[in-house]
Length: 180
Figure (spheres, rainbow, N blue to C red):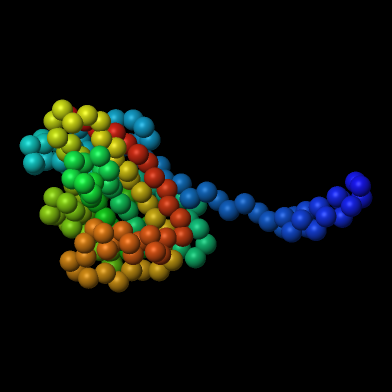
């Protein structure tokens, strides 16, 4: 009986012998952390909010093989809109770029598309939940893309999200919190 089990296992062991684990695609930040509250620096300045409207520092590593560009999204699924709130969508970040500094919320690299956020501005727009609405989650996600994307100049957040997810090789998210 053991010999027959071993006969079945040896081919499987052979298949995995040359397999090496790919590096994990990981997003980190010196400004925000998963499950922790953001500082007022990252609050929007407008719509009744008085923060610094500064985007957080982000770094990523371990991009999947075949990555040709990156996209960054910041999204609040708790906004009382029925569809959440898009704070940031930037696509076609060059593959050579693996970090952005604090306050670099309108990326000016060649071919980058800064999509209009739900405040009606291009680039990053900080947290601004309604007063007394409780804790909101802010999902900062970097996507590794299999190609640079072609989007219309007035692309909606939904179209941008669809195209990014259709061409994503992997993603990593930090979910920070904020309330007023």
